[in-house]
Image (cartoon, rainbow, N blue to C red; front, side):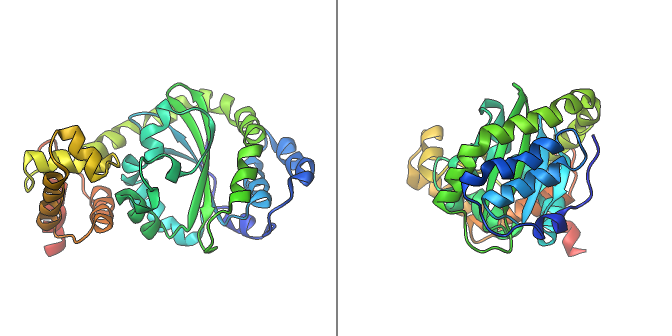
Length: 298
């Protein structure tokens, strides 16, 4: 199970227009033929591209308490820096797809459907789209076991219009066939290579420690509780209910968090977190924010 070199050029040179599903047999035939060949990931996204045009794609393996494992890289070049230096460096811990996948079923998902409020207006959502440069995204999730999932993520980087309602409907309709092809292609390989994936657990635990300790030396215990609920995508009212405090009190804690961490907005806070946990490794009682701040002053 090896990581594939970036295949974005292959994706960008394929069809740029969506297809009518009356031509679905012609679209899916190459995908079925490519199962169990090294060309399968490229053909998979070429197939998706004919349903709904995309210009960035990736396949990852998710397991709880482990860093995502990269299986295929078809990212747009302008998204590579965010993926390598932010997402894989720790931002994945805040992704609703990564947080929720153990309780999810196989299917077609957009990140916006996984948050209790509008994903685009959530803390993670604003930082995610701003830092990655994506205009829109979608995902095919294949549950291999109860705690293992294969994620084929794709989106629009340079294409500045989000997926249309018709395109999303067509992706929903075609999901069972695409899922079956993904399962046929990858399942045996993932079982054989499970040991290589397990090696990512130590890195994941280090990143989890950095996230948990963020602001440890600056924030009060209550402010840290609020911050961790923000990590879970909780809006002020939901966080206030969880803590049994008023929304006004919760919003006051958020303002204090912003002031102490020297940020002006939710999106700025999450962008800072993306940067810090990707660059700083800490021990159990160290605050990565303080370590990072001292480093940039040198």
